[in-house]
Structures are given as C-alpha cells and as structure tokens.
Image (cartoon, rainbow, N blue to C red):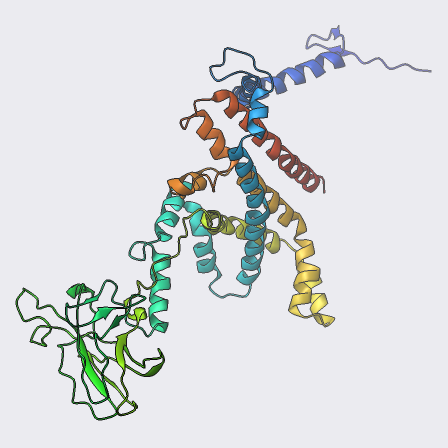
Length: 453
C-alpha cells in the first residue's frame, strides 16, 4: 500500500509543508470583510444607528432628558390626529396601489395594440420625471375652487354654460320706480298689467364688462296686441355717465337671454318669453281682459356654477390620491410591460387557436403569468404610499390639512412643524417602520424566489 504525501517544493528543490485550509479560509474572510466594510459602515451610520436612536428617543420626553417609558405611545394612540392619519394611510394602501397596478396593466396590454406605442409610453411615464413637490403645486392649482383660477372647475363651468339656457346676471336690481324685488330674489312689475300693455325693466347693478357677447344696443319693444305683453329688459347705464333713468337711449345695452313670465293672480305662469339681443320680449297667448304681473324669475340672477370645493375636507383625499396615481401609473406600466415582453407568447397563441377570445386570453393566460411582476409592483407601491409625504403636505390648504393627514406628515408636524416633540415624533416613526416592514419582507422574499428560479 502506497501513501501519497502532499508536499511542495521551493524553486531550489527543497520540500515545504502544504498550506493549511483554515488559514486560507480566514484569508478569504478577511478579503471579503475588507470589501464589505465601507458599505457596512455607511449602512450602520445611515440606517442602523438612526433606527436604534429613534427607538431609544421614543421613550424620552420632549426635551430628551427624562425617561417616560411608553407615554409617547399611549399619547400617540389616544390622539385624534393620529387616528385620522392611520385611517388615511389605510385608505391610501387600499386605493392607490391597486389603482396604479390596474391602470399599469391596462396600459401595458394596450401598448401591444398601438402603432404609436413609444409616444403613448412617453406620455404616461412623463409625470415620473416631475418631483412630488412640483406635482403637488400643479394639482393644487388645477383644483382651485374659483373657476377663474382652477382649470378643472373652469372646464365644468364651460360645460355647464353650454347646457344652461338661463341668462345669469347676479346682483341685478331694478331702477327705482320701475319694478320690485320679489322672492328668490325675482324682479316683478310694480302693478298688474293686461294684454296689450308694455313693461320695460331697466336694471342696474351689472357691470358693462359682464354682459354676454351677443348683447347689443337696447331696442324699443314693438306694440303689443290684445293677447301679448311686450317690453325691453336693458342695462340702465350709459358708459361714461349721463342719460335719463328708465329711458332706452343710445349706449344702453339690452340684456339677452332673460326669461320673462306672465304670472296670474293665483301664482300660475300663463306665458313666458326670452329676451333677444336687444333685450326685447313678447309674451304671447294671454287672455284679453285678464290681469298679469310681469316677472323676471330668480334663475336669471343666479350666481351660476361657482366651482366644486375639490380642496375642501370632504374631497381633498381623492384629489391627492389622483395626483399620486397620475405620477405612479407610468412606473407600474413600465414594470408590467417589461414582464409582458419576457413572457412566452406560445401559450397565448395556443389558447387563441383553441378558440379563446381576447378577454379569456387576458384573464386566464396573461394575468396569471404576470402575477409575479404584479405582486412586486403592488408591494413596492404599498411601501411607497405608507411613506407618502410630499403630496399630502403641499396640496391641501390649511383648513383641509387635518382631513388629509397621514402618519409621515403627522410625524414631521409634531417633531419639526411646530410641535417640537421629538419623543412623540420618534414613536410615530417607529409606528411607520413597523407598518412598512411586512411589505419590505414580502418584497425581499419575492426577489429571492425569482433569483432562485
């Protein structure tokens, strides 16, 4: 039996002992540690130390010089602002990630059907290039209540004006001695009239610049027959001043689009007309000998559409979530489109050959194959919305900030935004960390599973 002995020789031919395996292992460990050390130092300084310090700080008072135990946590969970923040965070987690993921899936599938997919992808993804702060400023301006400032309410006001036939002259009142203000406030003639009569309504309280574009010089109404009442509704103001009160003169504008009713003594409307460009009207079909009061209904003087209070407490969360979806739907689309491009298309083609329609192909083949990517996108967005701060801080006006509060904003407010209570702020930071950790663990596991396949 021959025993082989591992020996080594030096260049001179002399033997030397073999290298120890343990010594080589320690050397490899030292090399690996030398490469990892800078990253571990940075990680410890920027992640581990802040977490540990925040945990410790959460057990101290505002000044940080007295140990208070769990008092900050008790305060946190008995504070109404914290309950509102937690409730809003739950709403964000339920709505925003699912909406972004669904829209991203729809957009990614549509990309395959479009010839101009590059332009479409650019348009949807472009908001990702805008910072959260800038996006918040954009959406706050877009949803201003005043239609003269907010583009959303301006659009609604424009559509409303297309379907509204009533003229709107808010603030109009009759010239003294030429009418009375009734309920509503409507404007009516001082006395009852019979068919064949004429009733003018010289109005004031309207700016010349607020008149509609089709308003022209006020005209004298034609003579009325025995079944008509005629008259003119006009602005009793001459630009530059002058003129006689209640008299139709050059420079006085007629008020078009004003509804005029002939009201019987029992309150029923027996006829109506709408003024033309020169302000003239003719109410026809009246009974000769009957008495009527001529009235301009209150709808003529309504304020009209004044804008939806999008930034009010009841709708502010919807606006903020919409702004988030506008930004992050592009991210979901790109991620899902990447997964879609790597998919084996033979299964889809085989299902089509077997007679499946496009909806069946999507629901039974495409969506299940994309489920790993969808889960990663969804969990990533959940982590993101749990930490949402910028949009919630920028978009709501002062009166709506409590209704839109989330944990990150509450943490900043009590710590640096006037509260100056770093103990309570640290407790809120730990709460936010605990809420984020499960989603982070799920994402890490998904990445490991994907790497192991």
